Structure formats: C-alpha cells, structure tokens
Length: 79
Image (cartoon, rainbow, N blue to C red; front, side):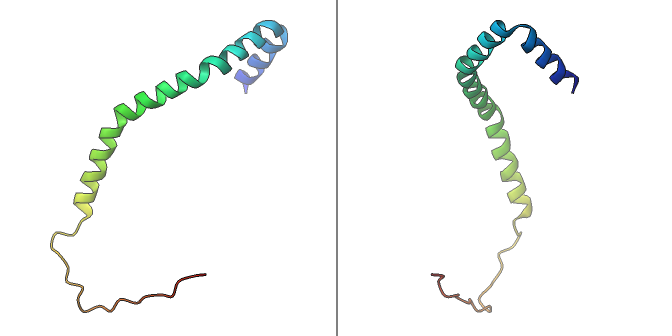
C-alpha cells in the first residue's frame, strides 16, 4: 500500500516526467518482456521436461497390464 501511495504522489508531482516514463515503458516494455520470457523458457524448459519425464517414469506401471477381459463401452457422439 505504501508503494502505491509513493507512486501516486510521484506521478502527481512530476506530470511531464511521469508521462515520458510511461511512454518509454510502453515502447520498451514489450521487447524486454519478450526477451525475459524467452530466457526463462530456455533456462527452465529442459529442467521441466526432465522433471516430467522422471515423474512419468515413477508413475508408470512396472509390468504391463492385460486388459483383455474388460469390455470397452463406446458412448454415442454428442450433437
């Protein structure tokens, strides 16, 4: 809450500077955000993939199950 009050008071005191900073943020913000997202994906992507693979290996059944005795029920298509 205090940060919001400080920001609002700074904007109220420095209208021109705040406007220029806002315009710069609108122009510079998207490319910077895009680059940060790509760096984050490059760093965390392989780690998440490896973790998913480890979890899948631990959750997978150790021996194949034989489901030949169960009947498959086909439900009618929804319209």
